[in-house]
Image: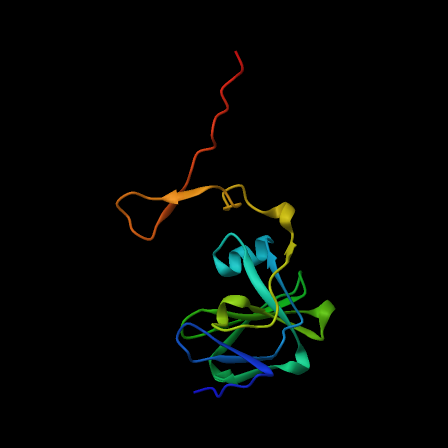
Length: 154
C-alpha cells in the first residue's frame, strides 16, 4: 500500500503490480494525437503528464516492466508484462523528462491537460466534442446527436 504524500502523485497499472511515483505537481499535461500514441494505447489519443526524470520513480514492480524501443523515432515505451498497461515513455531528445499516461493516476497530478500535440493527425473517427444525448434503453450510454438542420429561408 502506498502512503499519501502531498509532494508526490502515485499511479499504477491495471493489475496493480507496477506503481509509479512522480513529483507533485507534474511538469505539464497534454493530449497526444500522434499515430504512435494511438497505437500504443489503442485509443483515439493518449493523455500524458510529464515529469522530470529526477522526480520519477518506479515505486513497486520494476521486474514486471517490459520495454519497446523505436529506434527510428528515438523513443522507448514501457508497459506491464502482466496486464499490458502502458506505463511511461521516454524520448532520446528529452533525456530529462519521463511521460506517464494520466489514466494511471486516480488522484490529482497537479496539472490539467491544456495542450494538444499532433492535433492535425487526429483521426476523423475521434470524438471531437459533439452534442450528446442519452441512448434510450442503455443506461450510462450516450450518443452523438445529428447536427440540427437549419431550415432554408423562404
